[in-house]
Length: 84
Image (cartoon, rainbow, N blue to C red; front, side):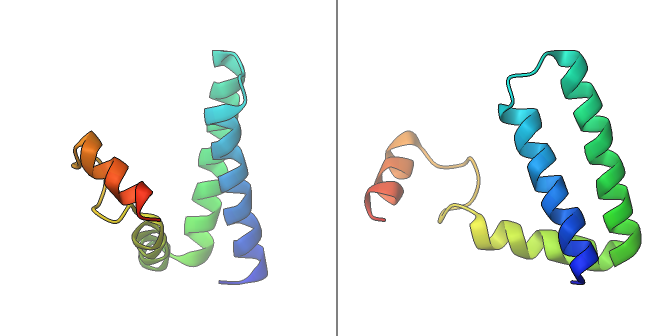
């Protein structure tokens, strides 16, 4: 990943956080989402679709909960985090 691509990816992460946690009204969230989509498009265009998909897959794999996403019972989730 080039420095330029890392900058775009970092911007995507920042925008995603702002959308989810910024406490903005829907109009601002929509504008941030539009900006996020443009940054993501630019990154995909620069990296290429296959490389972008692979990079995202590796990231999800690296940061996924031990048992995967969403199929654990509350007790399983509690045990996973208690063991950390």
